[in-house]
Length: 59
Image (cartoon, rainbow, N blue to C red; front, top):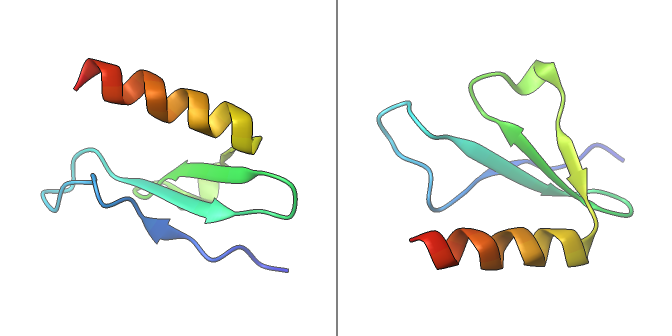
């Protein structure tokens, strides 16, 4: 199954910080929307939740 990538709601429209996310078979994928062919980072749901908590603390 091919992942369906969507741009994060926090990504800018100016071509700067663009992150895409997708539900993978057993993980959550993250990739740079400017370089989609350069691979992605796969995180478990627990790792993804921890990352989001960490990011929100810094906002």
